[in-house]
Image 1 (cartoon, chains in turn blue, purple):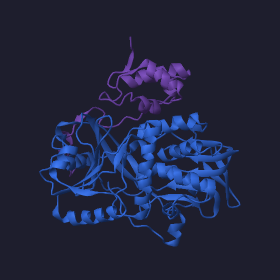
Image 2 (cartoon, each protein chain N blue to C red; image 1 turned 180 degrees about the horizontal axis):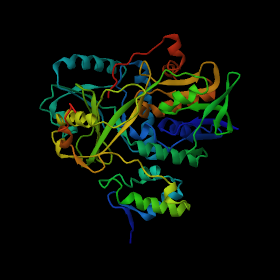
Image 3 (cartoon, each protein chain N blue to C red; image 1 turned 135 degrees about the vertical axis):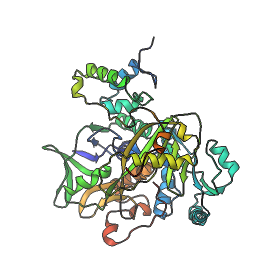
Length: 376
Length: 89
């Protein structure tokens, strides 16, 4: 009998496994059907920020950022507070971002408008000729998804967590309103608590166990250039389109921009995306047309109706927890999600009231949470 | 003397063997843990070598080990190329 079985070996599952191991939470097993990080985690940009507009996002992300710092100290995870920079090229966007900044500041997230000289210092290879304003978030940053998954996996394993990679969970066994374990093939793996952290797959997996999640996987596209020396430190956002670009620790520039996609659409590559992402970023990165595109891939945002995750216990099913629906913000939130879930499993309550408001029950009870700052 | 598996990312046979011993025994994880195949050659030269080392170490024929995902544009392509895409096609 396991104390905790985690379904899903992305950043959320692996972070939770590490957290539980550190807290001595007993026998823990993590099951991953493909390879660790192989879902949304390794397709993400690695950006980390607390500059949102909802209390839940801001408070939890601030704590997550502290925990990212601890991961760097303890495990040497590649993580840097290199900032986020919103590049504004239209006057009409300035007021909106002033308002966002006021919200951030009221929660102690010190975003501020910066001048051209500042932009040139932190982002020497960004062309500012079409810039009318820029908002900078010094608390934000980035981490390497590979490094974060692998270092926490190795640490968790050395602390005794068992990993079953390449094993697909068919369903969660629910009997008399209680989760008893997970079913893999014909085998029941019994557990005191089951956590489903399977990203977009969570919706299909839990449906087979009679639990419906209001969750829609939406394809998002990202492309990567060849590697360069230092170009820009912060993750940059083109406010006009919501496109982002970040220089990875390895030196590549990773870029994304929204193209029209239907929920549940198959993740397929589109020439249209490459055209849009290159033309959008050529405005700020004037050298981009001469650079080489190395790779292009598609991943999922698992989107909920209010763009906030579904966290914690499932009403009506004892011992079953979920952590999914991060709507594109799962990587950055993973450390705090691990902390909150570990506490929830141990004591029946999360650490913070903000986490408590993110349970699945909010959709039934009509307590949706508003978040404005969702980017492509 | 070092024997390189991946010239772009400078990964040696020794690195690969060590990673396999650490438990990275599938191609996708080996690729990402070591960055084999993530340089400009896009895995063209190194992934087959990686596959053959893994196959010998596990005693599993290479065709049973699958292959890594191949991402477009397959070869590094100048970004300017994509600005010329005709949208009405």
